[in-house]
Length: 300
Image 1: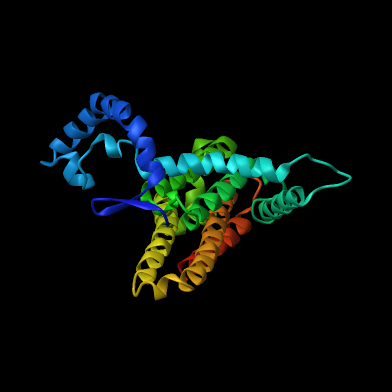
Image 2 (image 1 turned 60 degrees about the vertical axis):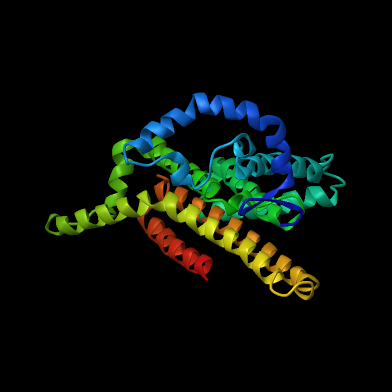
């Protein structure tokens, strides 16, 4: 949130300007010969241009978007943080970093066991990656020279699509394509209730289809609004509002970052549990109720 360079109407971290200063020109030339003609031909069908749609003139200064740079940094920071916390693993004399990682591992493992089942441990690497990476991305906005990549809808939609693709892959690989599609119809009902079965199928199909959108919008809206609240309140009456208020808002921002990473990870677990063949129908119904409860908490 701090040490930002102003560029037009947008505030850009200095590290983004630095990277674009050295890498923006070659990336700009490559994209102008590859992706830009495709975007131009696509939007020409609707009588508009990429510049009008995206609201910015494309140039070497913005060839590499800030959210792409921040997300790559988040990935690197995640690896470094885990490596530092891990330290030298020891069973006899574990250090505080190792114990912290073990506590997080056990917490995620217990959640997987209760939501997906004992057979769900194989999904731990993916679920843990979602949790840690999103948490680091959310917290980046609380430090100088950084912005939260999850404050961009491009990043959150990519994460939502990743979760969507993974749990559908799990469902198809475990139940087969037909079995995965059939689970949208819910429990088997008598032939006289066939219209109800069709209704349930279409409702579940629509519900599952919009999950990447709901996952992405929920995470983006909370992180973007958190940064906007910080900027607007601290600039209300400077310098008074820039003394103690940022400390309170930073604490609130950390809380929001923790909650949103937890909600995204938990919902991903619930979605995996719904398509897992080892769960019975009443477990799927319980997970659907859990999903509603989690979304209510996230909205609050």
